[in-house]
Length: 408
Image (tube, rainbow, N blue to C red; front, top):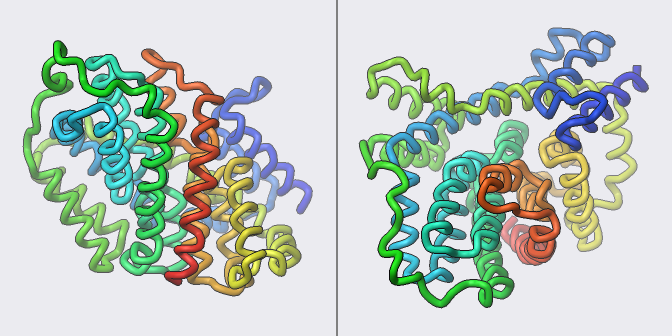
């Protein structure tokens, strides 16, 4: 049974890591679903155990957040934001810095992947309009979205899972992870200036006038008001998933028509991917191999010791890029009490696995979204990204991890 579970997990991992295998070109969501099916068919899990393995709180929160983001996009909020960036930026360098703040800030309360889906076309349009080099702005968008999303339990899928697994409240988590994410964004902006200041023109070309009209101007303010209300609910400690769902339902009721168009914008494949992955990881965990591995490794990763802290950070960073951050969170979460500082461990696990996504272009879904959506106008290369991503990841982790330890 152990051997079967490990083989199924490795097959699923191969399908996830490679996105599409030549021999079995299923892709990530279908690959996770195949792994889940094999875990049950092979007898590693019973159907009832597979149902219990799926984290409903995470899927509900992810779904509701995507619905709210879809309403925000339809209202023109993101396009209005692009116009604000251009006007307030005053210069190409100022625009770059503002993009860091906006991307990071939005990603703290909307899923970072969704923020990248909404903002990438707008960033591309602004760069084309003003003949700006696209690479620095795309890298700023992706890396800042990842860093900003580390600030809260709703910023990205792995943090949502940590919120469900740990029981840590939204506000306590924000107070401990938020300062590290803020420092990370400031450092990321400084590195962008250091890397790209010579590539950016001193001013916008005068002959191009104002910001391009990307989509109709801001419509109903209700989606923005509801989003702020949902964020306030998070801060008050209300249930994350149902608070977001209440906001989504309020928007549906206010529109008074079937939300078919909104549902079409929900990334259903992402929900399928996570549901399947929950089952696959539960199957592997049932064998006891993960528990045994952590029992052996725990003495080397004690979070109250400098050496253990450094080892944990390096291991999570490497694992998040090899296995992906969501599986690393699922496999590591149950072992955190054995590492000496559970509360600190949950915040560190969220921060490190999220920032680790900035290491390479393939390190996070947000990075891939930015590259894919911009490829018709600019090919963001693996090495171009790595030159910045490697430095940013090391610097942000070197500053953020000690700060979290000091705060916790």
